Image (tube, rainbow, N blue to C red; front, side):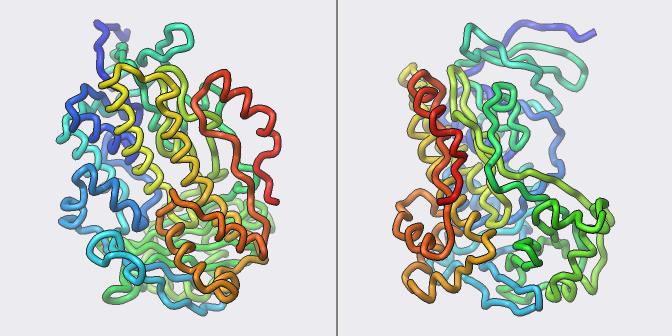
Length: 439
C-alpha cells in the first residue's frame, strides 16, 4: 500500500518537464529558488512538435541553451517553403533576409525526445530538482488557493509537496485547467493530424537541407515535411476530420498514404527511403484556458493555450511563456506576493502572441486567402507577415490585420487569459459567447 511521508516545501512546484516547465524551472533555479519539477514520464520520451521557429532564440539564450543547441547534432533550419498540390514549389523564405544570420535567423529541426532531455537536464544544472516517473494526483487546497500537490512515484509511494505557487506545464493535457473547467475549444480550429517518420527519404542540399516545407492538399489541408538529423524526416498531414476520413477511411496508415497521392512533391520525396512503420493520429488541436492564473496556480505553455501546428508556434510559445512566468514568479517571491493579479501582464502578453498568430492561422485556412495576393497589394506587409510567422508576436500588427481583412475575415480576440478574480469573471462572461468568430 502507498504510504504518505512528511510534507516537503518548495518555492515553486512545476507539473510537467517539457519545454515550458524546463524553461521556467531553469530560470527559478538559476535565481536560487527551491523549485521542484514533477514529470510523469521517464525522459527521453517521444513527443511531436519538432520544428523550432526563429524567435525561440531569445528564451533559449536566456537559459543558456544556445551553446548546447549549436553543439548538438540537430538539423539546422534556415527557411520555410510552400508547395502546391501539383508540385510547384515557392522560393525558400530565408530567415536571414530579415534577421541576423548568426543568431535569430538560424534555428533547428529537433528530435523532441533529445531536445526535451537537454532542456530538462539544463533545468537540473540551473538548480531545479526533477522527479521523473511521478504522477500528480490532485492539487492541495486551502480554501480556493492551491498550496501544493499530492503525487505518487513509480514505487507507488504517495506524498505531498507544498509551495506558494504551482505551475501547470502539462501541455495539451492541461491537467489543472481541465480540472477547473477552464479549457475552451477554439471556435473553428478543429483539425486532425496523421503523421509518421521516414528514414533516408529525399531532402534538399546544403543550406536547404533543413528547410521546413508546407505542402498543400485539397480543402486547405497540408503536409509538413521536417528533415531531422540521422537521416530521419517527420511527415504529417493536417486537415478537417471530414476531409481525411472521407469515403470511410479511418486507419491512420491508409489516410496518410492516400493523402500522399494528393501532393506530387510529397509523393516524390517519399518515393525513396523507408517508413518507420508507425503512424500517429491526434485531433482537436486548438484549446484555450479561460484564465491564466488563480490563487496559487499559473498556467504555462500548451496548458494555457495551443493553436494549430501549421506555423510551428507551439514550442516558441511554450518557451516564451516559461521565460515570462519564471521572471514573474522570481519578482513575486522577492516581493512576498504571488497573488493572481501578479500574473495579469504575463497573461496579457502570452494572449497577445497567441491572438496574433491565431489570426494568421485563420487566414491560412480560408480558401480565399493567399499571402501572395496580400503582398502584391501591400509589398511592405511582407516584413510584418515574416515577423509574425517567425515568432516575433508581441507587437502591434493592427495595420496588417486591417489589410488582410480586405481579403478574408479574421477572428476577434477571445476574451480569455486574465487571472481568475471577480473582475475578470465579470468582464469575460458576457462576451465569451461570441467565441471570437471572424468578422
